[in-house]
Length: 259
Ligand code: MF3
Ligand code: CO
Image 1 (cartoon, rainbow, N blue to C red):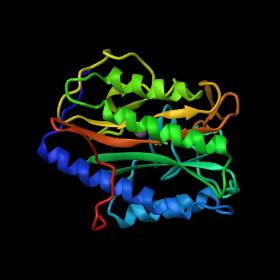
Image 2 (cartoon, protein in one colour):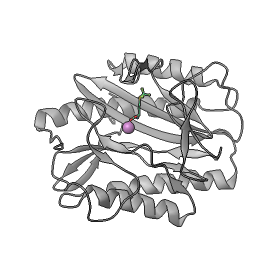
Image 3 (spheres, protein in one colour):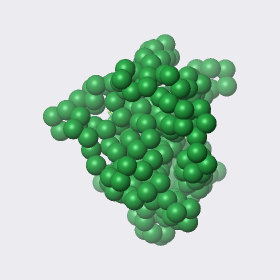
């Protein structure tokens, strides 16, 4: 499958969609504290997406015969991704919580995620967040015209494993544009110099998912929530990035004046 390259119009629309996704994520972060239910974050996210004139790309997203039932993905502790918000899941001091926001706006998708601490977290969990965030930055730095997708993958894997953590294998980053998932797949593990060559105008969702323990995962009976197989904590950071001749540009940043 060839990797879509966006023209100026597509890039402008990607900028708008990604700015909205980033603004929603920024609005949710300060709401995270002990006593808040993940459903509270869902409701704030749903309202923010609507206020900014976008639609959730998660709500109704089809996988097999199932449709995702919420507008946000909120994953706590050992939940890796695709946690379904719930009134029963109340955040506690020491938890970590991943917020994943994907929006549609004027035919284009913006996708971003981050993991934040709830109250005071253990030093080991703080290190997990820091290393995962750094792995995303190192992956983004490899998204250079002329390099290959495997260069992104290898940079992420190397940093995570050097810290004693593991990257999830069953799910990968992806191209993003007129659909949430476009070619190429962007694994968080791999070898330098392999995979498709990066060209200008690609929009890539780079998203390390990092487990404090082993890399294996399983999906809960709800059909969506992915958890670590060994119950260890997991972190997830994601940006949508535009490749340009001048280097990678992170699109999932809020507009300075608001959106
Ligand atoms: N960022 C997630 C992904 O790329 C969002 C999925 S939305 C859901 O897979 F509907 F699948 F939850
Ligand atoms: Co994604």
